[in-house]
Image (cartoon, rainbow, N blue to C red; front, side, top):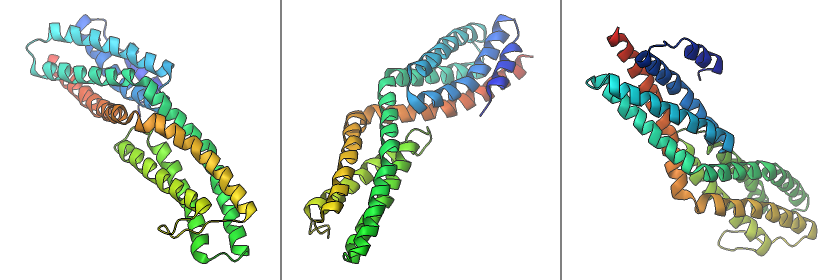
Length: 261
């Protein structure tokens, strides 16, 4: 990742000539926009959205100059195409800023409650072993700790803006559904899942506490994932495309600068 100091250094070195300055601005933006895209994907905050919109405005201005001054240049035409596609991706991110922010809220909610759920289940496992519960039932409780860990990892991976973001969202939903199914089975019993109803008061109190925390994640997931699935899929694609397109843009600008000298 290019640091802010390097970006600032490149910006200060830009030529004062209109066309060369536009090329220099584009080069800086090709480094800055991926960084800002990652910041948007990390939280969807108003501040990060505004910063990306500001870069989009500068991108459009620079592209307009390039289009005017290099109208017959093949490399410049490809730069224009890349820049326009990056701008279109930014439109998608800005339009879905609220959904990205809700995804961030889901991650925070998950990170807040999962460690407590795991601790509660670990205590249950110890208690069940001491009370001579069947080993199959102890294993089920222990497995809930591992599933909870997968849920936590997926909630973090969804926000990383890489090729695994979409699959992480699907993994999150699948593991959360499985976790809740076994939790419900422990409270009510489920022969199909091979889960006995837990009747001991202390253990049931633990399960009810876990259920309360799980419902917090389930409710957030219903709002943030299920309702916004299509929008989030477009967001993931747009953010990842911004990374690759910006890299291409940087390379093409260097070639155009070299050919123009």
